[in-house]
Amino acid sequence: MTWTYTDANGNSSTQDQDVLINFPQIDSMANVNECQSFTLPTITGSNLSGNEMYYTGSNGAGTSYSSGTVLNFEDFQNYPVTLYIYDEVLTTPSCFSEETFTLTLQDCEPPVILPPNEILIPEFLTPNNDGFNDVWNVRNVFTIDPKAQVYIFDRYGKLLKALSQSEPFWDGTFHGKQMPSNDYWYLVQLINEDSSGLPMSQQLKGHFTLKR
Image (cartoon, rainbow, N blue to C red; front, side):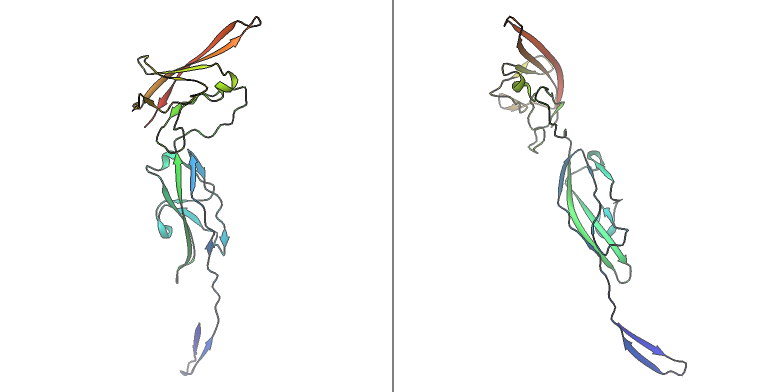
């Protein structure tokens, strides 16, 4: 940068000065694919202003979110969503840094790790090949009881699928035809033996929702 000095008599002189501008540099962030919600992490980088934020538009435009904000599945109509991480330390001239990542939230159940002696019956089936709840199964049931029987019915009581240890999943079809979005009913029958070795039966009944 060159400075020019002029006195009252019109005499002037110039002087060069090196000016060091510390440009902000935001660290990049990997794309995100989560169930239901995601908490925006702390923005990291170098020479940041302290006012760095997440935005839905480029150059600090759109809706802004601070670190620690929880974004939920219902917050956006379509996925994936591109989010912009933006920081600006000067206005003239513009001195900024921007990084982007995509956020995908699934309307799904979070992963559940069950103890070996418990079963879990999912409430939803969403067979859209997104890797979440694409098939319906009673988790752990055939580990607890290899002889267990699981039946799936439509709302009129028509048997659609009988699950077994060798075929423990239902993909939402009947004879190769996709079943519509609706509620479906299940019957889980556990086969136990009493002290004399005679079979006893315990039943679990309920319904779940198929969404397309």
